[in-house]
Image (tube, rainbow, N blue to C red; front, side, top):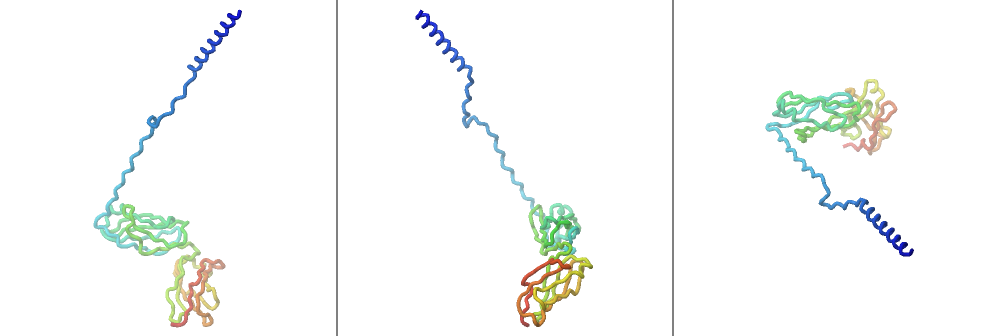
Length: 250
């Protein structure tokens, strides 16, 4: 009886070991970690070839840049000329103009003569009041910065107030204002000093953009520096400090 029990236990042990080996053979083995040499990588793209710069056309000279007028309002056009020599109809395609303000665009460039290329700026309705200075480019490279600015002035605003001369007595002067007014608005336009006794007078107008006049300091105004304000009706459209200087007679 004992011998039969030992044989039964031995048989159970053998069957268990056989089953365990079978399970191990059926269990999938994890793949080995790839070595760096086995990892595929995308080939690097070659560096982009440099685009050779186009040579500046021979016998071409850019000499100047002029405007039909030097002030424009939003939604207006402003014509200009590029002056020089050696221009051809084909060269017109190599030249461009950067207005210097994103709300101003170049509407067209047109060959006129070997010494002149004509163009037009178009001022956007959103353009701010400011001075703008364009530049001329050949094949995208700047070759000329316009010697003069042109101005953009929104309606009812002031681009510039400047004194053009001062009298020898040091107590009077003439001024010019660059603005954008209608004839009815001119009657609501005035300039005042920061101190009583300094009187501004508008004497001439070339609307919509230009006003000229004079300013005089009364005898009671002491020597010193003063400011000014420009009004359109009751609205202040320009304020400047320390721009009026009253000095002893020369």
